[in-house]
Length: 403
Image (tube, rainbow, N blue to C red; front, side, top):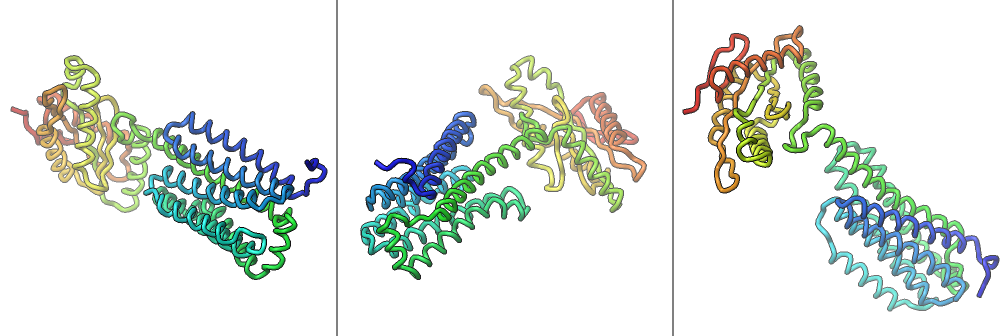
């Protein structure tokens, strides 16, 4: 058995890459264990690392043992690794699985290995396998591009995450072309067991590592998006939270100062909400909050913004909306909640809301002043019997008491 001193630099590099892939596979298994929402993709990517490492090790073994069967197995492992990576990406990005394409690619690979198994057939075999692997890399790039285009519109991020796969496709396409342009050189290298040079070995290692980093980057990107959403949205209702709504108010006030049209705010409060919690428990109260929140979001315009302001209170921002228009919309919301069925424990709960309406008053107005007026209008609706709408500044009653 040859000693380590007999190894060529390319073989040493591939052996080290094998160890690197084992460590990365362990990292993916740990990621899947810690994060349930990426468990299945992480298992696929652990398989990608193991098969990639196995293909590197096979090339090292085949160079010493001069066993063509071992070299063919290495090509199969590498192709399988790319397909596992892509399937994991499809799961991660919630795109339809394309298992028939994967099976078809493996079938073509097996056909190439069966048709051209000898050293003399190396150019055709290498060209076919490289072309198939190139298509796999392009497929991976397309899956990533679709996901990034759906999540964000910043082209630089799309370029960053798709670049490794596109570079891999370019390298593999070049390898396929060169195999057909220089068949004699490839046949001699195959017979001598030196078909992979140090440069090629390092290129494969860097390609594999860049693909792994891309996958880790996508996971971090997704987790970052979830953290950003959690920081700006109420966990129970899914609406914007108070902190995020403060930012929206600031932006809307700046826009109104520049462009002129006023905007209005609705302060919405569920009537007698404490009685629901006391009589049926907090689970029923949470269900009521979610149902009312969904009703508000469903019956507002696309440009309107609704948030959970605190407890059973919601704040609705109506861009480019006058006091009269906001009052009309508030009446519709009030009536809709009154008729809203809330099934719970075999019965339909019923609830009503009180709404205070306020309009932004030109450049000197502030968010705090606007909200204070909406709050004052809400107190007027509460004191007037609830289930109604009151409007600032005169706090004229526009609603009615439910029968």
